[in-house]
Length: 153
Picture 1 (cartoon, rainbow, N blue to C red):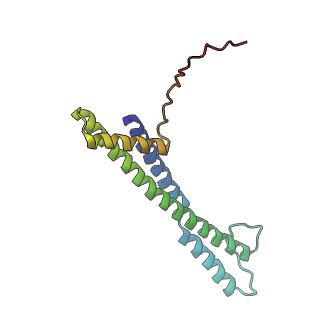
Picture 2: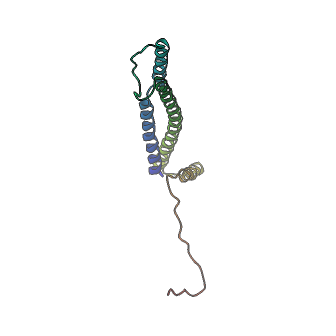
């Protein structure tokens, strides 16, 4: 169980790092909104005049480029909000497994078991089973029968 707790905590900690990187890579939504706003202002000021614009996609109109910038900003905001929620849950999960690991190590060092430690071990095993970090061992079925053994053909 100690190894399973350690593995669960490590997995959650590596997931935290990945989520942090995803948030950092997402960029800044405000810069995309400002870019869209700047394009909008330039278009309004240059009504009827020919102006050189730095467009996101040269094959699309300035209005479509404004929509692309706003869409990118919304995408970044969704990514950040999704990753932030996942980051909090993985932090809590990693803390939970590290705490269980420390308590399990402490129990092993003490060497004696009381009702509280037995209850903790049973609860921890159930948590590890439920979360898929360990698998339940199957016990072999022992057939007790008075009938003669069956022949296999």
